Amino acid sequence: MLLWVLLTSTFRGSDLVAGAIAAVLSAAAVEAVRERERFLFRPRLRWLRRAAGIPVRVVVETWLLTVVLVRHLTGSKRVRGALVAVPFRYGEANDAEDAARRALVVAGASVAPNTVVVGVDADRDELLAHQLVPDAARLARDVAG
Image (cartoon, rainbow, N blue to C red; front, side, top):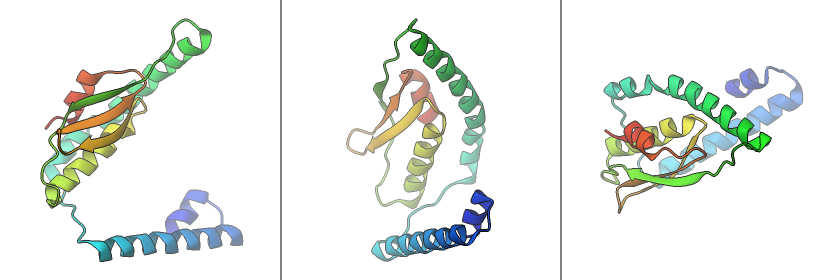
């Protein structure tokens, strides 16, 4: 509820009601997940080193997409996105550390604007992503490890 008020920066009654509803729905979702199965998520502190490059990647990809989209709009170069599959160790399905690693890699890879992770294939040990400017080699380096 406090997060809702901070994000909207208003204290009107309707905003407070909407915030209360969002808080209740969020709490209900957490309880539903908690009752369904044990929550598995055990990140490691050493993984933070890999996250240090994310802000730079966001800036670089934002600039890249700005240039590419301007070229597309002016008609000088057509943009064609692509689905890209790269090797990614899935790990154990019920292991808390593997679950945390998968979640953080998916979130970290999807933060920059050029890449949106579509899914992780456990059988093929691959990560599937959509990229507006395809760069499988870069994505493979970003998710390796």
